[in-house]
Length: 150
Image 1 (cartoon, rainbow, N blue to C red):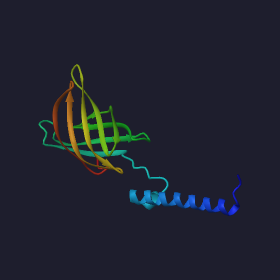
Image 2: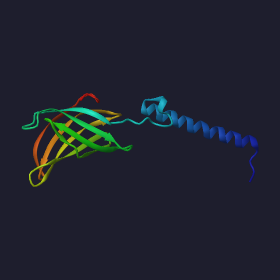
Image 3: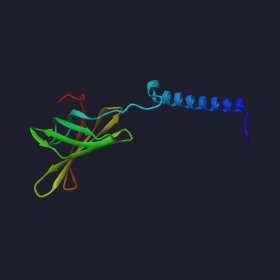
Image 4: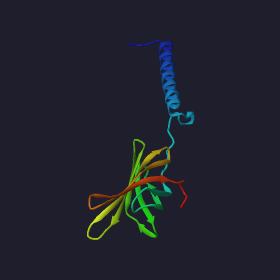
């Protein structure tokens, strides 16, 4: 079945109009017309000051370094009270950042957990947990400072 040239051009123009309209609608939903066809990546890589409050043992401000691996996560390390914890990882999923830092203990490992709201490269407030031997040892409120602030 052959279509006349006029019908083919009209169909192509209508299809293009629908694609551009859908892209514009998605850009409006995302709030940025510059990201109409390819959304900008939002990096969490950097050194972040983290402040723990209302905790029994972990109050204070330390430096959490995140190194993103091109996806939604990567490596993490922490400097707390002059001690470096070099082994950790992080993941951002559904606007939630989860950072796990391995804490060497006597005969077993613990984990320092930093959980906070994260969106478009910005990290908000959250919860800190010090997990030792599979049990909750300490918890507190968590506030992230400006990236590059430590």
